[in-house]
Image (cartoon, rainbow, N blue to C red; front, side, top):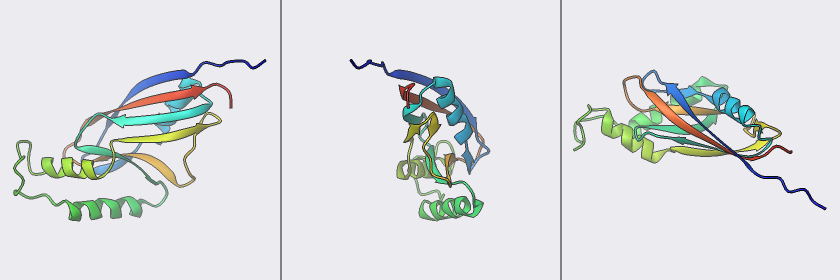
Length: 147
């Protein structure tokens, strides 16, 4: 006879304060949500509720990686006055394009109650606007209590 275990669903909204254009690591807040959920084996989905910032899983040891990424994307999508959408300033439309080229959601497996990230991986909110903002990230965790 096999015991049937029902799936756990847990959801939390994180409010992340940004400092203007930058990559801010928030891996520990996502891991805290996983711990609170009680899920030992499952999947953690994170979703950013904004169109001018993005989510990335990236190098968490050498800050030059993040600086190089920011420099590359700034060159790829420069700020200028040739965009039609400019109601919120010259950084607004480039921020939307940068967000479209990256991600607004990520999925990470959960193993033994921990995010199954690689040794050098961290979860970052990439603010594409000049001014600081408070961004909302929905964390949805699904899984079971057993490993």
